[in-house]
Amino acid sequence: MTTDISHPYPIPFNRPYVTGRETAYIKQAVQSGKLSGNGQFTHKCQSFFEKRYGFGRCFLTHSCTDALEMAAILLDIKDGDEVIMPSFTFVSTANAFVLRGAHVRFVDSRNDHPGMDEAQVEAMVTPKTKAIVVVHYAGVACDMDHIMALADRHGFRVVEDAAQSIDSFYNGKALGSIGHLATFSFHETKNIHSGEGGMLVVNDPKLAERAEVLWEKGTNRAAFSRQEVDHYTWLDLGSSFLPSEITAAFLYAQLESLDVIQQRRMEIWLAYQAAFTSQMGSAKKGYLGNIVSALSGLKVRLPEVPVYSSNNAHLFYLVFEKAEIRTLFIQRLQQLGIMAISHYQPLHLSPFYKNKHDGRALPQAIKYSECLVRLPLFYDLPLEKSISTGPLVIEKTCRG
Image (spheres, rainbow, N blue to C red):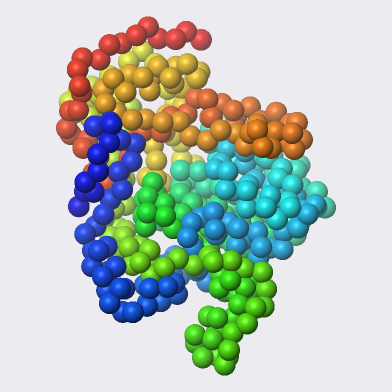
């Protein structure tokens, strides 16, 4: 079922997919008389993840940002603590820990993948290191054996920022099940969404009871609702992290269709790969033909997936040699009515943090910021339909 939305591009970057059961489940939640969080649909969603992927305790949140902020509180991040994470990531990854007073130490990306360069991490560990936040970019796993071994050796905690990583695996282990904590996003740009939404996964049993208290505004209200105590009271830090049953009901409808959605997204991802590696011949028809024609004369690098990682088809990106070549490609797609966009700006060079950064050069993060472009990838993407608004004018290729 396609959402009926208007957009200036015939092919937008994203179009949220709706299965058709969302409104029925929302109506069911309304009729139940329990609309605030931690009701039947919250439990169904959390149980789904715990059973399917072997996660520890799961806690739905308003967003992945909320989940990261919960993680920072749960790990007792304080002034002077250091947290290691990639520079090429969304601002929430860093913000959650900076809010608790942490100093962020940024790692560069790999030269073969936008994810963090795991080989650089150990040299950055100091006695002040409290945690590392690994970001599984595009749902492609970081080398988690390497990271967890470092954590064991140096005594810090690992948070998996798995915002893009639902249904993705590292050597057969679900991303989000490996670190001490993990966070997920259900923003409308993700494979599975609830408009806005997120989740904290607590894989360390010693942290689970406190996580529930933080989740319930710092109180033991969840225990009260289970009739384990005769009143609830303020026990700890916390905030209003849990979403309403309306959000959870929407999300549960999506989760029921996870396999169907993933199958379609993978078909699109593989079609892109085949078109760009000439496995489809000239791919002269339809949407893919439009994309291929826009690449005429331009050198480009395709996504790489390490042998230890699966691919959950969260996004398909291209990496060009120079920023101006990427700009030329985006302009060609705009002429064809296709919206393609860049991604993160490196956090170590951001106006907020550049004076706090230790001055290390992070060239790969800058390269991906300047040269990476993301192509449309959503359930209803019309691969076979031609959407060209006119003949494509091929400008001269930028020279390097």
